[in-house]
Each structure stands twice: as structure tokens, then as C-alpha cells.
Length: 178
Image 1 (tube, rainbow, N blue to C red):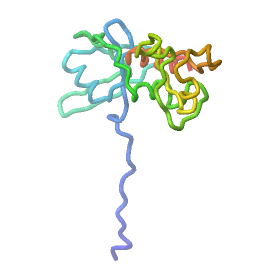
Image 2: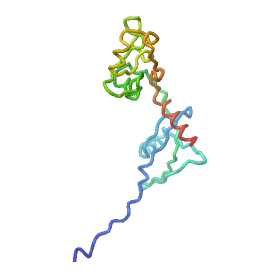
Image 3: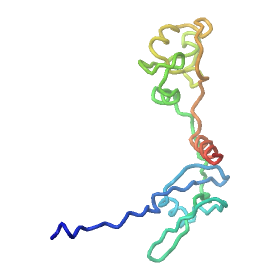
Image 4: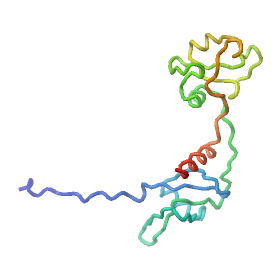
């Protein structure tokens, strides 16, 4: 008898709370993507305001005594979102991340080490502009010499990591163009 009375669950509707909202600074720089719960908190506390773009979505969030329309884009109205950001110190983890875990001379991903383009023994500093990821073979081949002395060429020019807000803004505007 129980086999005949199978309980069927209603189809799951996608939750409004699974969506995300883009947060802009007071200067209209896209800072981050946050979940709807965080956006509701910012809007209700008066820390953010709605931005009305013609193509933006609006979600309806209901509570027992309030219906709130949450747009796809909000702008912070308080605080200083352009916090002071320091370039992180050079370390192995950040260096590998910057160089995509590949040797900057041959492209290998095995036995990676840190190489100073201008060796420290010749006055080179331990800075983002002078340090790259290199495989053991290339690092030994270059040894304590300058690039032109070895004939080796870097695949990419080393540079310091980008401010996270700038990186997010670049990605956001790239997505908007598509």
C-alpha cells in the first residue's frame, strides 16, 4: 500500500538568495560581487543605495512585514571603500600564483624555484620586478648571471600584483562588453 502512495516533492524553485549583486564604491568603481543577503543588509542599514541601470535585474525579497526590491547593482554611500592596500611582500605562494605555476623561461610546471633576474650578488633586489618562477633546470642554467649573458628570454615581464578592486573592476567591465 505504501509503494502506491509515493510522496512527490514539489519541484525546487531557484532561491532568490542564490543570486549575487555587484557593489560599487561611492566613485562608481565596481568593488566586489556579494550575495543578496549582504546586499539586503547594506540597503536596509542605509550603507548602500540602488543603482538603476536599464538592463539590470531586480529581485523581490520578502519578509513578514517588508518587501524589498534588490537590484543587480548597488552603490556604497558610507565609509571609505578605497581602503589603503599595500602590495603584498614577495613570497613563494604569491609568486607562483602570479606566474601561473609555470617556469617563466621554458614553461615547465615541474620542480619550480624562485629566480632573481638580476642576481642578488650583482645588486638585484628581492622585489616583484626582479623575481620570477623558474624550473630547477633553467635556474641552474642561468645560475649567477644576467639574462643577456645566458641568452635566455622571459615569457612575461614581472610586475607586482594588482589591487584586488582594480582586478575585479577590469573583469567586471570585460564581462559587460560581451
